[in-house]
Amino acid sequence: MTDNKLILFIKYPVLGQVKTRIAESLGNDYAFGLYKSLLADVSVLTQQINAETVIVYSGPRGAAFDQFPGITCILQHGHNIGDRMYNAFLDIFSTGAEKCLLIGADIPGMTAEILHDGYDILERTDIVLGPTKDGGYYCIGLKQGSLKSTFFKNIPWSTSLVFNETIKSIAEAGLSWASLPVLSDLDEIDDLNRFYHSASVNQLTDTYQFLKQTRIY
Image 1: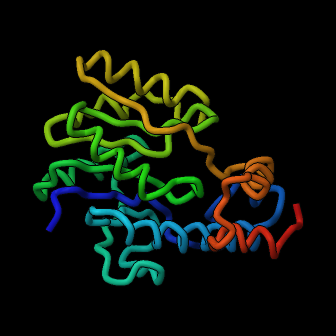
Image 2: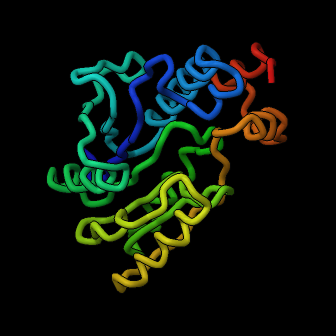
């Protein structure tokens, strides 16, 4: 079994509770369909990397993810997203993992090569971050011994300051970090358009096909 772990930090797909910013403009049914497409694509991604995937989810206890047969699922716990992310790392490192990446499901540009680079970077630095164009991050990776609760405290989540404030916290801890490529998430209608018209988009993905078949934005 590999010492590399991949935390898939996601919500269980419940109508009206996923991709809520998209839902405000395009409706809950659309947002639900989009999210299920994203889950299908990230399921394929997890099969392409040399790491054991663990789903750490929010939603009904004992939920079963049809897209991820046989993958261990752990319920998120904590008072806020920072606590839940910290606890996810704490839980996985307690199993003996040496290197661990945490990702979500709404970055269609993420590839197995990017994640493999993340694990490689952790051979020579303490932390790896994958920044998003809106000032957040799509991936945070740590190696055994580098986890600090301060990386997830007093961070203004869901703002353009997340990445920079996380870097400050890492510097204050005296640890090193490196960056993965900048990618875009799918939170707004403009994000959908940019992804759909991207020259590098994989048109075989479930997400692309969903957007192609439901051009209502």
